[in-house]
Length: 253
Ligand code: SAH
Image (spheres, rainbow, N blue to C red):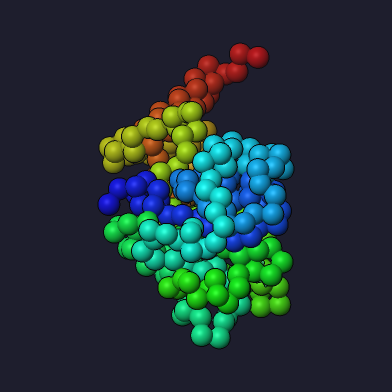
């Protein structure tokens, strides 16, 4: 299925967020990864200028965000929901790793809307909220410090969603420049260069064909590692030709 369509079916639900800045950060995190459906369950302050500031270019997601009174409302129509929690719950759904759970989430998204559910900054998700979900995810952290900032947790999961939706290789953002490329030099072009190099090394006295030692195979190994391009062979041969000119005619300066 089309990766963008899959991503558009993932709701990000923030339960009772206290800080509008985190709502803005979550919107930005979502937009960078191609998600757009934000649900806010009883946000403490929203709309709020701080949310807009932290969202920067993702204010459109905030404008379209659904503000609802309960998690049940946010999950209406969803086929599958994943609770995000650093803590294991008694009687909660099975806890998985982000990557494996996101694979399941996207498989479900092929059928219809799904949700990632995040908790409040101070108290996290309640047991009741976790039990409304069919799976739980704990982001592996240093066990001594396991609580991520809400916006960071949203970013990490949205990234995993994007990676999985695009089968591990999402297209990179266009950089505005086309990188220079030159075809790989062919065997005969490389041989032409080696012959030229050997000639110049001999003419300058650097290489004595009567006592060749291991110089030539070592140079072959060096240039073999470089996987020379045609353009590079031309540059190297240009340098050799200029050296020949100088050795024939003497320096002009
Ligand atoms: N102090 C709270 C955590 C608040 S962080 C607690 O102990 O539960 C805000 C939200 O970010 C959490 O409710 C959770 O949805 C998400 N989150 C933060 N760290 C996480 C982690 N290591 N694994 C999964 N979710 C995490």
